[in-house]
Length: 82
Image (cartoon, rainbow, N blue to C red):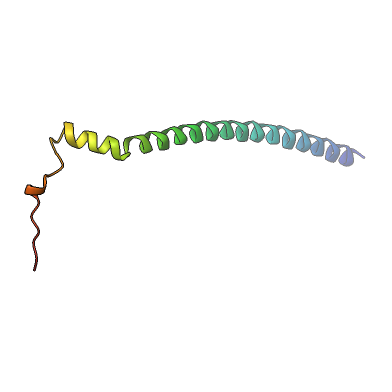
């Protein structure tokens, strides 16, 4: 009878520990999901910023102002034939 009572006690301790571990892992999972949501929002913002910086108008503006580039006139264009 003592062995049976000891086994019941050990089983109950195992059940309590399993429940505790399950709750702890669930809290960790929820924290990781929240972190993933935050990173998804940041990724979306970065993609939006990248698309803004890569527009044709922006590239042309940078080429004109910083690189001092301009569209060549017809007189500046030379056709080379083999």
